[in-house]
Length: 511
Figure 1 (cartoon, rainbow, N blue to C red):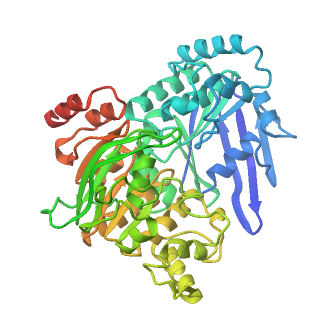
Figure 2 (figure 1 turned 135 degrees about the horizontal axis):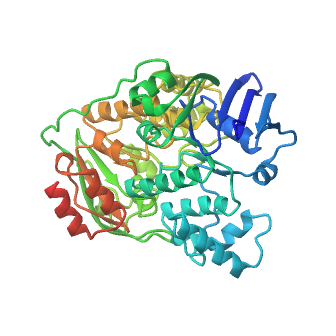
Protein backbone atom coordinates (compact mmCIF):
# COMPACT_ATOMS: atom_id res chain seq x y z
CA UNK A 1 0.00 0.00 0.00
CA UNK A 2 2.98 2.32 0.59
CA UNK A 3 4.66 1.70 -2.76
CA UNK A 4 4.62 4.97 -4.77
CA UNK A 5 2.78 5.10 -8.07
CA UNK A 6 5.79 6.86 -9.64
CA UNK A 7 9.29 7.24 -8.25
CA UNK A 8 12.26 8.99 -9.85
CA UNK A 9 15.71 8.18 -8.44
CA UNK A 10 18.71 10.30 -9.38
CA UNK A 11 17.34 11.21 -12.78
CA UNK A 12 19.87 13.15 -14.89
CA UNK A 13 19.55 14.42 -18.44
CA UNK A 14 22.15 16.36 -20.42
CA UNK A 15 22.00 18.16 -23.73
CA UNK A 16 25.61 18.51 -24.77
CA UNK A 17 27.35 20.70 -22.16
CA UNK A 18 24.02 21.71 -20.57
CA UNK A 19 22.62 19.65 -17.70
CA UNK A 20 18.83 20.04 -17.76
CA UNK A 21 18.18 17.72 -14.79
CA UNK A 22 20.70 16.69 -12.14
CA UNK A 23 20.04 13.77 -9.78
CA UNK A 24 16.31 14.46 -9.45
CA UNK A 25 14.36 12.46 -6.88
CA UNK A 26 10.56 12.63 -6.89
CA UNK A 27 7.76 10.48 -5.47
CA UNK A 28 4.10 10.60 -6.54
CA UNK A 29 1.66 8.42 -4.63
CA UNK A 30 -1.66 6.94 -5.66
CA UNK A 31 -4.47 9.48 -5.61
CA UNK A 32 -2.10 12.39 -5.01
CA UNK A 33 -2.14 15.72 -6.83
CA UNK A 34 1.56 16.60 -6.93
CA UNK A 35 2.85 19.96 -8.18
CA UNK A 36 6.10 20.32 -10.10
CA UNK A 37 7.36 23.88 -9.64
CA UNK A 38 10.27 25.88 -10.98
CA UNK A 39 11.31 28.88 -13.00
CA UNK A 40 11.48 28.73 -16.78
CA UNK A 41 14.51 26.66 -17.65
CA UNK A 42 14.46 24.84 -14.29
CA UNK A 43 14.04 21.49 -16.04
CA UNK A 44 10.32 20.75 -15.55
CA UNK A 45 9.52 19.97 -19.19
CA UNK A 46 12.59 17.77 -19.59
CA UNK A 47 11.62 15.83 -16.47
CA UNK A 48 8.03 15.11 -17.50
CA UNK A 49 9.16 14.19 -21.01
CA UNK A 50 11.31 11.50 -19.41
CA UNK A 51 8.33 10.33 -17.35
CA UNK A 52 6.23 10.10 -20.53
CA UNK A 53 8.99 8.45 -22.54
CA UNK A 54 9.65 11.25 -25.02
CA UNK A 55 13.23 11.49 -23.65
CA UNK A 56 15.43 8.94 -21.91
CA UNK A 57 17.55 9.77 -18.87
CA UNK A 58 21.33 9.65 -19.06
CA UNK A 59 21.46 8.46 -15.46
CA UNK A 60 19.02 7.33 -12.82
CA UNK A 61 15.91 5.15 -12.67
CA UNK A 62 12.17 5.53 -13.24
CA UNK A 63 10.12 3.18 -11.08
CA UNK A 64 6.46 2.42 -11.72
CA UNK A 65 4.73 0.94 -8.70
CA UNK A 66 8.09 -0.21 -7.36
CA UNK A 67 9.39 -1.79 -10.56
CA UNK A 68 12.10 -0.16 -12.73
CA UNK A 69 11.06 0.77 -16.25
CA UNK A 70 13.58 -0.34 -18.87
CA UNK A 71 12.44 0.35 -22.44
CA UNK A 72 10.33 3.47 -22.20
CA UNK A 73 8.59 5.45 -24.93
CA UNK A 74 5.19 7.21 -25.10
CA UNK A 75 3.44 4.07 -26.30
CA UNK A 76 4.88 2.06 -23.41
CA UNK A 77 3.99 4.88 -21.03
CA UNK A 78 0.38 4.82 -22.14
CA UNK A 79 0.24 1.04 -21.68
CA UNK A 80 1.43 1.51 -18.10
CA UNK A 81 -1.34 4.03 -17.56
CA UNK A 82 0.56 7.32 -17.95
CA UNK A 83 -1.34 10.04 -19.81
CA UNK A 84 -0.08 13.52 -20.63
CA UNK A 85 -1.88 16.74 -21.51
CA UNK A 86 0.65 19.07 -23.10
CA UNK A 87 0.49 22.86 -22.80
CA UNK A 88 0.15 23.24 -26.58
CA UNK A 89 -2.66 21.11 -27.94
CA UNK A 90 -1.95 18.40 -30.52
CA UNK A 91 -5.24 18.46 -32.42
CA UNK A 92 -6.19 18.49 -36.10
CA UNK A 93 -8.57 21.42 -36.46
CA UNK A 94 -10.14 20.17 -39.71
CA UNK A 95 -11.20 16.89 -38.07
CA UNK A 96 -13.97 16.11 -35.61
CA UNK A 97 -13.59 15.46 -31.90
CA UNK A 98 -14.28 11.78 -32.59
CA UNK A 99 -11.58 11.54 -35.27
CA UNK A 100 -9.00 13.27 -33.08
CA UNK A 101 -9.71 10.94 -30.17
CA UNK A 102 -9.62 7.83 -32.38
CA UNK A 103 -6.16 8.68 -33.69
CA UNK A 104 -4.77 8.81 -30.15
CA UNK A 105 -6.06 5.37 -29.10
CA UNK A 106 -4.29 2.06 -29.69
CA UNK A 107 -7.56 0.25 -30.42
CA UNK A 108 -10.35 2.79 -30.92
CA UNK A 109 -12.85 0.21 -32.18
CA UNK A 110 -15.90 1.13 -34.25
CA UNK A 111 -16.40 4.89 -34.40
CA UNK A 112 -20.12 4.86 -33.43
CA UNK A 113 -19.28 2.93 -30.26
CA UNK A 114 -16.38 5.29 -29.54
CA UNK A 115 -18.68 8.30 -29.93
CA UNK A 116 -20.96 6.83 -27.25
CA UNK A 117 -17.96 6.30 -24.93
CA UNK A 118 -16.81 9.90 -25.47
CA UNK A 119 -20.25 11.24 -24.57
CA UNK A 120 -20.49 9.01 -21.48
CA UNK A 121 -16.99 9.70 -20.13
CA UNK A 122 -17.05 13.43 -20.87
CA UNK A 123 -20.45 13.82 -19.19
CA UNK A 124 -19.44 11.72 -16.20
CA UNK A 125 -16.44 13.93 -15.47
CA UNK A 126 -18.13 17.25 -16.16
CA UNK A 127 -16.28 17.77 -19.46
CA UNK A 128 -19.14 17.66 -21.99
CA UNK A 129 -18.10 17.09 -25.61
CA UNK A 130 -20.02 16.51 -28.83
CA UNK A 131 -18.01 13.89 -30.76
CA UNK A 132 -19.20 15.07 -34.18
CA UNK A 133 -18.18 18.72 -33.68
CA UNK A 134 -15.24 19.95 -35.72
CA UNK A 135 -12.29 21.11 -33.63
CA UNK A 136 -12.01 24.47 -35.41
CA UNK A 137 -15.50 25.38 -34.16
CA UNK A 138 -14.61 24.83 -30.49
CA UNK A 139 -13.33 27.20 -27.83
CA UNK A 140 -9.93 26.66 -26.26
CA UNK A 141 -11.58 25.29 -23.12
CA UNK A 142 -13.47 22.73 -25.19
CA UNK A 143 -10.29 21.75 -27.01
CA UNK A 144 -8.57 21.09 -23.73
CA UNK A 145 -11.47 18.82 -22.81
CA UNK A 146 -10.60 16.70 -25.86
CA UNK A 147 -7.02 16.29 -24.64
CA UNK A 148 -8.19 15.29 -21.17
CA UNK A 149 -11.01 13.00 -22.31
CA UNK A 150 -8.83 11.06 -24.71
CA UNK A 151 -6.47 10.46 -21.78
CA UNK A 152 -9.39 9.38 -19.59
CA UNK A 153 -10.53 6.88 -22.23
CA UNK A 154 -7.22 5.09 -21.67
CA UNK A 155 -7.97 4.76 -17.91
CA UNK A 156 -4.83 6.59 -16.76
CA UNK A 157 -3.27 5.88 -13.38
CA UNK A 158 -1.02 8.93 -13.67
CA UNK A 159 -2.06 12.09 -15.49
CA UNK A 160 0.64 14.67 -16.28
CA UNK A 161 -0.70 18.18 -16.93
CA UNK A 162 1.44 21.06 -18.23
CA UNK A 163 0.01 24.57 -17.62
CA UNK A 164 -3.61 23.40 -18.04
CA UNK A 165 -5.30 26.65 -16.96
CA UNK A 166 -3.21 29.12 -18.98
CA UNK A 167 -5.97 29.40 -21.61
CA UNK A 168 -9.06 28.98 -19.43
CA UNK A 169 -11.53 31.41 -17.93
CA UNK A 170 -11.88 31.36 -14.10
CA UNK A 171 -15.09 29.35 -14.40
CA UNK A 172 -13.48 26.79 -16.72
CA UNK A 173 -10.50 26.51 -14.37
CA UNK A 174 -12.81 25.83 -11.41
CA UNK A 175 -14.56 23.10 -13.41
CA UNK A 176 -11.20 21.54 -14.28
CA UNK A 177 -10.16 21.53 -10.62
CA UNK A 178 -13.33 19.67 -9.68
CA UNK A 179 -12.57 17.06 -12.35
CA UNK A 180 -8.99 16.62 -11.12
CA UNK A 181 -10.12 16.26 -7.50
CA UNK A 182 -12.59 13.59 -8.55
CA UNK A 183 -9.92 11.71 -10.51
CA UNK A 184 -7.62 11.83 -7.49
CA UNK A 185 -10.40 10.55 -5.24
CA UNK A 186 -10.76 7.61 -7.62
CA UNK A 187 -7.08 6.78 -7.22
CA UNK A 188 -5.55 8.51 -10.24
CA UNK A 189 -2.28 10.32 -9.51
CA UNK A 190 -1.76 13.75 -11.04
CA UNK A 191 1.55 15.49 -11.73
CA UNK A 192 0.65 19.13 -12.19
CA UNK A 193 2.82 21.91 -13.67
CA UNK A 194 1.71 25.51 -13.31
CA UNK A 195 3.19 28.93 -12.70
CA UNK A 196 -0.02 30.09 -10.98
CA UNK A 197 1.00 29.64 -7.38
CA UNK A 198 -2.40 30.40 -5.85
CA UNK A 199 -4.01 27.56 -7.81
CA UNK A 200 -1.17 25.23 -6.77
CA UNK A 201 -1.92 26.07 -3.13
CA UNK A 202 -5.64 25.44 -3.65
CA UNK A 203 -5.32 22.19 -5.61
CA UNK A 204 -2.14 20.28 -4.74
CA UNK A 205 -1.21 18.38 -1.59
CA UNK A 206 2.49 17.91 -2.35
CA UNK A 207 5.08 19.77 -4.39
CA UNK A 208 8.58 19.25 -5.72
CA UNK A 209 10.51 22.44 -6.49
CA UNK A 210 13.28 22.56 -9.11
CA UNK A 211 15.90 25.23 -9.49
CA UNK A 212 18.62 24.99 -12.10
CA UNK A 213 17.67 21.38 -12.85
CA UNK A 214 18.04 20.24 -9.22
CA UNK A 215 15.47 19.56 -6.52
CA UNK A 216 15.70 22.32 -3.91
CA UNK A 217 12.57 21.58 -1.88
CA UNK A 218 9.71 19.18 -1.22
CA UNK A 219 6.72 20.69 0.56
CA UNK A 220 2.98 20.75 1.14
CA UNK A 221 1.95 23.86 -0.85
CA UNK A 222 -1.20 24.20 1.23
CA UNK A 223 1.03 25.13 4.16
CA UNK A 224 3.03 27.72 2.17
CA UNK A 225 2.23 31.21 0.93
CA UNK A 226 2.50 32.09 -2.75
CA UNK A 227 5.43 34.32 -1.85
CA UNK A 228 7.08 31.42 -0.02
CA UNK A 229 6.71 29.13 -3.03
CA UNK A 230 8.13 31.82 -5.30
CA UNK A 231 11.08 32.21 -2.92
CA UNK A 232 11.78 28.47 -3.16
CA UNK A 233 11.66 28.60 -6.95
CA UNK A 234 13.83 31.69 -7.35
CA UNK A 235 16.07 31.58 -4.31
CA UNK A 236 15.16 35.21 -3.60
CA UNK A 237 12.20 37.42 -2.73
CA UNK A 238 9.88 38.25 -5.63
CA UNK A 239 9.31 41.97 -6.08
CA UNK A 240 5.97 42.55 -7.74
CA UNK A 241 5.61 45.75 -9.77
CA UNK A 242 2.93 48.19 -8.66
CA UNK A 243 0.67 49.90 -11.17
CA UNK A 244 0.68 53.66 -10.62
CA UNK A 245 -2.55 55.60 -10.33
CA UNK A 246 -4.13 56.48 -13.66
CA UNK A 247 -2.77 59.79 -14.91
CA UNK A 248 -4.75 62.40 -16.79
CA UNK A 249 -5.11 61.56 -20.45
CA UNK A 250 -2.79 63.33 -22.83
CA UNK A 251 -2.23 62.58 -26.50
CA UNK A 252 -4.14 59.90 -28.35
CA UNK A 253 -1.63 57.46 -29.86
CA UNK A 254 -3.64 54.47 -31.19
CA UNK A 255 -7.15 54.56 -32.65
CA UNK A 256 -9.30 51.82 -34.16
CA UNK A 257 -12.36 53.35 -35.75
CA UNK A 258 -15.21 50.92 -36.46
CA UNK A 259 -12.87 48.29 -37.90
CA UNK A 260 -14.52 45.48 -39.86
CA UNK A 261 -12.15 42.74 -40.98
CA UNK A 262 -12.96 39.26 -42.34
CA UNK A 263 -11.24 36.48 -40.46
CA UNK A 264 -10.64 34.28 -43.49
CA UNK A 265 -10.76 30.49 -43.42
CA UNK A 266 -11.47 29.30 -39.84
CA UNK A 267 -10.77 32.82 -38.57
CA UNK A 268 -13.00 35.21 -36.61
CA UNK A 269 -14.48 38.29 -38.26
CA UNK A 270 -13.76 41.54 -36.43
CA UNK A 271 -17.02 43.50 -36.16
CA UNK A 272 -17.08 47.27 -35.75
CA UNK A 273 -14.09 47.31 -33.41
CA UNK A 274 -13.43 50.77 -31.95
CA UNK A 275 -10.68 51.55 -29.45
CA UNK A 276 -8.66 54.54 -28.21
CA UNK A 277 -5.35 54.16 -26.36
CA UNK A 278 -3.69 57.25 -24.93
CA UNK A 279 -0.07 58.00 -24.16
CA UNK A 280 0.94 56.75 -20.73
CA UNK A 281 -1.86 54.20 -20.25
CA UNK A 282 -2.17 50.44 -20.49
CA UNK A 283 -5.42 49.14 -21.97
CA UNK A 284 -6.25 45.45 -21.61
CA UNK A 285 -8.22 43.18 -23.92
CA UNK A 286 -9.63 40.13 -22.13
CA UNK A 287 -11.16 37.15 -23.87
CA UNK A 288 -10.98 33.42 -24.39
CA UNK A 289 -8.67 32.37 -27.21
CA UNK A 290 -10.42 32.03 -30.54
CA UNK A 291 -12.60 35.13 -30.19
CA UNK A 292 -10.61 37.34 -32.55
CA UNK A 293 -7.41 38.02 -30.61
CA UNK A 294 -5.16 36.80 -33.43
CA UNK A 295 -7.10 38.81 -35.97
CA UNK A 296 -7.01 41.94 -33.78
CA UNK A 297 -3.25 41.71 -33.33
CA UNK A 298 -2.78 41.29 -37.08
CA UNK A 299 -5.04 44.27 -37.81
CA UNK A 300 -3.04 46.51 -35.45
CA UNK A 301 0.43 45.26 -36.40
CA UNK A 302 -0.18 45.61 -40.13
CA UNK A 303 -0.02 41.88 -40.89
CA UNK A 304 -3.62 42.27 -42.08
CA UNK A 305 -4.65 45.44 -43.90
CA UNK A 306 -7.86 47.24 -42.99
CA UNK A 307 -10.55 48.06 -45.57
CA UNK A 308 -9.91 51.78 -45.09
CA UNK A 309 -6.79 53.78 -44.21
CA UNK A 310 -8.76 55.62 -41.51
CA UNK A 311 -9.70 52.39 -39.70
CA UNK A 312 -6.33 52.45 -37.90
CA UNK A 313 -4.47 55.58 -36.75
CA UNK A 314 -1.06 55.80 -35.10
CA UNK A 315 -0.26 59.25 -33.70
CA UNK A 316 -3.00 60.77 -35.91
CA UNK A 317 -1.58 59.17 -39.08
CA UNK A 318 -4.00 56.99 -41.04
CA UNK A 319 -2.30 53.65 -41.59
CA UNK A 320 -4.97 51.01 -42.11
CA UNK A 321 -3.63 50.49 -45.64
CA UNK A 322 0.02 50.23 -44.55
CA UNK A 323 1.93 47.01 -43.85
CA UNK A 324 3.91 46.01 -40.78
CA UNK A 325 7.22 47.68 -41.77
CA UNK A 326 5.53 51.03 -42.46
CA UNK A 327 3.69 50.91 -39.13
CA UNK A 328 6.96 50.22 -37.35
CA UNK A 329 8.38 53.36 -38.90
CA UNK A 330 5.42 55.23 -37.37
CA UNK A 331 6.39 53.95 -33.92
CA UNK A 332 4.52 50.64 -33.51
CA UNK A 333 6.19 47.55 -32.02
CA UNK A 334 4.52 44.31 -31.01
CA UNK A 335 4.86 40.85 -29.51
CA UNK A 336 2.58 38.16 -31.00
CA UNK A 337 1.06 35.32 -29.02
CA UNK A 338 3.07 32.56 -30.69
CA UNK A 339 6.74 33.07 -29.89
CA UNK A 340 8.08 30.16 -31.94
CA UNK A 341 7.74 30.86 -35.64
CA UNK A 342 5.92 34.18 -35.28
CA UNK A 343 7.82 36.14 -32.64
CA UNK A 344 11.12 34.45 -33.43
CA UNK A 345 12.65 32.02 -35.91
CA UNK A 346 13.72 28.98 -33.84
CA UNK A 347 16.70 28.08 -36.05
CA UNK A 348 18.09 31.63 -36.12
CA UNK A 349 20.52 32.99 -33.56
CA UNK A 350 19.33 35.62 -31.09
CA UNK A 351 21.43 38.15 -33.01
CA UNK A 352 19.61 37.35 -36.25
CA UNK A 353 16.25 37.40 -34.47
CA UNK A 354 17.09 40.85 -33.12
CA UNK A 355 17.75 42.02 -36.67
CA UNK A 356 14.39 40.76 -37.97
CA UNK A 357 12.37 43.52 -36.29
CA UNK A 358 15.06 45.92 -35.10
CA UNK A 359 16.79 46.74 -38.35
CA UNK A 360 14.82 49.96 -38.71
CA UNK A 361 14.13 51.37 -35.24
CA UNK A 362 17.34 50.10 -33.62
CA UNK A 363 19.50 51.18 -36.56
CA UNK A 364 20.85 47.70 -37.25
CA UNK A 365 21.05 48.23 -41.02
CA UNK A 366 21.95 51.18 -43.20
CA UNK A 367 21.55 51.45 -46.94
CA UNK A 368 20.59 47.80 -47.08
CA UNK A 369 23.82 46.73 -45.33
CA UNK A 370 23.58 44.87 -42.01
CA UNK A 371 25.66 46.37 -39.20
CA UNK A 372 26.90 43.12 -37.69
CA UNK A 373 28.62 44.52 -34.62
CA UNK A 374 25.69 46.78 -33.78
CA UNK A 375 23.23 43.91 -34.19
CA UNK A 376 25.21 41.64 -31.90
CA UNK A 377 25.56 44.44 -29.35
CA UNK A 378 21.80 45.08 -29.43
CA UNK A 379 21.06 41.37 -28.87
CA UNK A 380 23.56 41.33 -25.98
CA UNK A 381 21.86 44.36 -24.45
CA UNK A 382 18.47 42.62 -24.59
CA UNK A 383 19.98 39.52 -22.96
CA UNK A 384 21.54 41.57 -20.15
CA UNK A 385 18.69 43.97 -19.39
CA UNK A 386 15.98 41.28 -19.50
CA UNK A 387 17.91 38.54 -17.71
CA UNK A 388 17.72 36.06 -20.60
CA UNK A 389 19.39 32.77 -19.71
CA UNK A 390 21.14 31.56 -22.83
CA UNK A 391 24.50 30.84 -24.39
CA UNK A 392 24.95 34.41 -25.60
CA UNK A 393 23.89 36.34 -28.74
CA UNK A 394 24.95 33.47 -30.97
CA UNK A 395 22.63 30.95 -29.30
CA UNK A 396 19.78 29.64 -31.43
CA UNK A 397 16.31 30.71 -30.31
CA UNK A 398 15.29 27.04 -30.24
CA UNK A 399 17.76 26.37 -27.40
CA UNK A 400 16.01 28.77 -25.00
CA UNK A 401 13.21 27.77 -22.64
CA UNK A 402 9.83 29.27 -23.45
CA UNK A 403 10.07 31.87 -20.70
CA UNK A 404 13.56 32.99 -21.65
CA UNK A 405 12.60 33.29 -25.32
CA UNK A 406 9.59 35.35 -24.29
CA UNK A 407 11.82 37.69 -22.27
CA UNK A 408 14.11 38.10 -25.28
CA UNK A 409 11.24 38.91 -27.67
CA UNK A 410 9.65 41.39 -25.27
CA UNK A 411 13.02 43.00 -24.59
CA UNK A 412 13.83 43.23 -28.29
CA UNK A 413 10.65 45.22 -28.88
CA UNK A 414 10.71 47.35 -25.72
CA UNK A 415 14.30 48.49 -26.33
CA UNK A 416 13.25 49.93 -29.69
CA UNK A 417 11.41 52.65 -27.72
CA UNK A 418 8.00 52.28 -29.38
CA UNK A 419 5.34 54.96 -29.22
CA UNK A 420 2.63 52.28 -29.49
CA UNK A 421 3.18 48.79 -28.11
CA UNK A 422 0.81 45.84 -28.55
CA UNK A 423 1.52 42.51 -26.87
CA UNK A 424 -0.50 39.28 -26.90
CA UNK A 425 -0.31 36.88 -23.94
CA UNK A 426 2.83 38.55 -22.53
CA UNK A 427 3.44 36.00 -19.77
CA UNK A 428 1.88 32.81 -21.13
CA UNK A 429 3.82 29.89 -19.65
CA UNK A 430 6.49 31.99 -17.92
CA UNK A 431 7.50 31.79 -14.28
CA UNK A 432 6.68 34.34 -11.58
CA UNK A 433 10.05 36.06 -11.79
CA UNK A 434 9.93 36.43 -15.57
CA UNK A 435 6.32 37.61 -15.39
CA UNK A 436 7.24 40.30 -12.87
CA UNK A 437 10.11 41.47 -15.10
CA UNK A 438 7.86 41.65 -18.17
CA UNK A 439 5.14 43.46 -16.22
CA UNK A 440 7.65 46.01 -14.97
CA UNK A 441 8.87 46.60 -18.53
CA UNK A 442 5.30 47.29 -19.71
CA UNK A 443 4.64 49.66 -16.82
CA UNK A 444 7.91 51.51 -17.47
CA UNK A 445 7.10 51.78 -21.17
CA UNK A 446 3.73 53.34 -20.40
CA UNK A 447 5.36 55.68 -17.88
CA UNK A 448 7.69 56.87 -20.64
CA UNK A 449 4.69 58.00 -22.69
CA UNK A 450 3.95 54.98 -24.87
CA UNK A 451 0.43 53.69 -25.46
CA UNK A 452 0.38 50.01 -24.40
CA UNK A 453 -2.25 47.47 -25.43
CA UNK A 454 -2.20 44.08 -23.65
CA UNK A 455 -4.21 41.18 -25.09
CA UNK A 456 -4.41 38.45 -22.45
CA UNK A 457 -6.53 35.62 -21.08
CA UNK A 458 -5.02 36.03 -17.62
CA UNK A 459 -7.42 38.23 -15.64
CA UNK A 460 -5.04 38.57 -12.70
CA UNK A 461 -2.45 39.97 -15.09
CA UNK A 462 -4.89 42.41 -16.66
CA UNK A 463 -6.17 43.68 -13.32
CA UNK A 464 -2.59 44.15 -12.10
CA UNK A 465 -1.43 46.09 -15.16
CA UNK A 466 -4.23 47.93 -16.87
CA UNK A 467 -5.86 51.32 -16.48
CA UNK A 468 -8.84 50.32 -18.62
CA UNK A 469 -10.18 46.94 -19.72
CA UNK A 470 -12.41 45.67 -22.55
CA UNK A 471 -13.55 42.17 -23.57
CA UNK A 472 -13.32 40.62 -27.04
CA UNK A 473 -16.04 38.07 -27.72
CA UNK A 474 -16.94 36.68 -31.13
CA UNK A 475 -14.96 39.43 -32.86
CA UNK A 476 -16.83 42.25 -31.09
CA UNK A 477 -15.09 44.50 -28.55
CA UNK A 478 -16.86 45.89 -25.50
CA UNK A 479 -16.34 49.50 -24.40
CA UNK A 480 -13.13 49.82 -22.32
CA UNK A 481 -13.96 50.69 -18.71
CA UNK A 482 -11.74 51.92 -15.87
CA UNK A 483 -10.25 48.99 -14.01
CA UNK A 484 -11.55 50.32 -10.68
CA UNK A 485 -15.16 49.84 -11.83
CA UNK A 486 -14.76 46.17 -12.82
CA UNK A 487 -14.86 42.81 -11.09
CA UNK A 488 -13.11 39.59 -12.08
CA UNK A 489 -16.45 37.76 -11.94
CA UNK A 490 -18.20 40.09 -14.39
CA UNK A 491 -15.31 40.01 -16.85
CA UNK A 492 -15.05 36.23 -16.55
CA UNK A 493 -18.73 35.82 -17.38
CA UNK A 494 -18.43 38.04 -20.41
CA UNK A 495 -15.34 36.16 -21.59
CA UNK A 496 -17.32 32.93 -21.40
CA UNK A 497 -20.24 34.39 -23.36
CA UNK A 498 -22.65 33.71 -20.51
CA UNK A 499 -24.17 37.18 -20.75
CA UNK A 500 -24.90 39.70 -23.39
CA UNK A 501 -22.51 42.60 -23.57
CA UNK A 502 -25.09 44.96 -22.14
CA UNK A 503 -25.80 42.67 -19.18
CA UNK A 504 -22.14 42.23 -18.40
CA UNK A 505 -21.49 45.95 -18.63
CA UNK A 506 -24.32 46.60 -16.18
CA UNK A 507 -22.90 44.03 -13.75
CA UNK A 508 -19.40 45.45 -14.22
CA UNK A 509 -20.61 48.97 -13.39
CA UNK A 510 -22.43 47.71 -10.33
CA UNK A 511 -19.40 45.77 -9.03
